[in-house]
Length: 301
Image 1 (cartoon, rainbow, N blue to C red):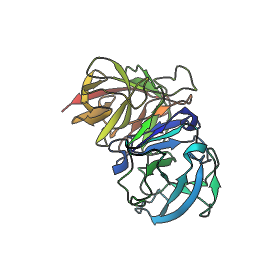
Image 2 (image 1 turned 180 degrees about the vertical axis):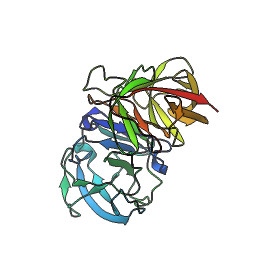
Image 3 (image 1 turned 90 degrees about the horizontal axis):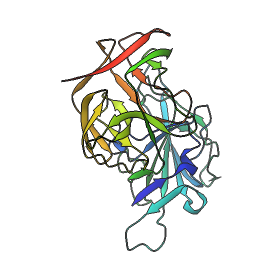
Image 4 (image 1 turned 45 degrees about the vertical axis):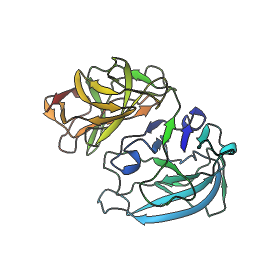
């Protein structure tokens, strides 16, 4: 089975990422992190709440002690922008369960939800790195699968066009946190549609890059076909080979990301439709000041 999400679902979020996470569901882009951009947690699906689960998160001094899992039996017919492809023997739409994490939800089992309904309060659990913004983690499984285990989500397609925005690696710091710095470049060319920072696939074609580069194991490529991008072969970013694509998934090479000549932890790459789009430095061991000019480079091993 394969689940496809279209703009009718995904356009309610400011930012998306299928790969910017170290956890198993994101290794091949089998889950999507949806960043609403405010305190609301809009539901990606219509359906009926099956269960809610609270789990203890890893202890971090910057994070919440608990995380939460919301399981929803999906009403595919009532969820515009979601489709399910089963095997050739299935004559009807197979049943589907949505796994939605990082939301402390007051909803009881049996509650009916529609796309866009507020599911509860976004949390910041110890599963997050300190540079991560609050978001909904969304994946899908068949009802007969293990619904609470971290791995096992179905293949997921984000069927929305993504524009690759060129970037020369330079920018000015516009915001900072204890472990990150946001640059003003590259600028979003037309807020409202999804874009990502440009890389080049093996055929020399531009594609938007997604993922934690290179503090996580892998990333992804997106183009006008969304996550159906097929970029088999070497991937180039900021003038250097940075990994090898197998379909849409990129396994990073052993490279070093530098800012103003000094190593940093990496870059947080994502797809965005909001005007605040730009490169995000992950730099727990470095400090940058607002207004500081930064030049990012990639050094091969």
